[in-house]
Amino acid sequence: MPSIRTETVKIDAGAHTLNGMLWLPEDPMGVVLFINGSNNSRIKPPNDYVACMLRTARLGTLWLDLAPSGEAGSVHRQLDIDGLTERLKAACTWLRQHNTTQELPLALFGVSHGAAAALQVAAALGRGICAIVLRGGRPDLAEHGTLTKISAPTLLIVGGLDDGVIDTNRAAYAALRCKKRFEIVPGATHSFEEPGSLEVVARMSRGWFLQHADAVPR
Image 1: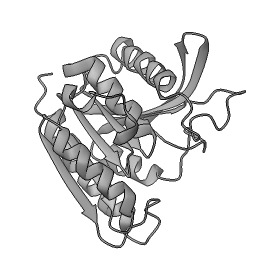
Image 2: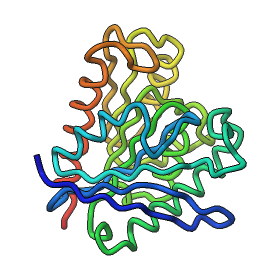
Image 3: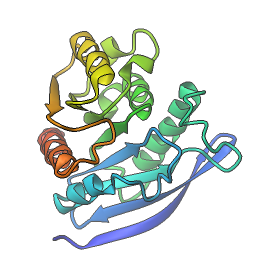
């Protein structure tokens, strides 16, 4: 396993300061910005298993608390996806300017409601994003027309028991004009808490990110 360097970060996002943690393995191949869709801690979220698997493959990860104090629950209730998108843009700008990450391919991992914001960021930044993975995502909450603007290769992963989300992701897959893939994990619910489910998500995500980070000139 590669050695991992951790760094506590503060990112200026206009009226807010975002707190986060950056994990970088030795000689990283890229960095993945995680966008959670709940009001759980984004610094150490429940699905950190996926991030750990990515780091063993020499992919850095950045986790942020995207709901600063005084706004607890706003991300969970999906009151302001546009505001969340602006914070994520600020995080991407920070990664592009930070001395340890500025040359690395940048990818996005969006969960649940956070998938909509991830898509809006990718639509705005174009080729500045090398790949996207959406896990149990809600792409239907993104602004109208967002999906047709995505250029980054996009992998959509949903649980086989998450009926409503399967339908919305299937529709999003049809609308995407980029390189894309749609995967259903049998027996998994929206939270992917079933034994082995997150392992499948991690394996698919790792392969997708490595494939497309490796295609970006360094």
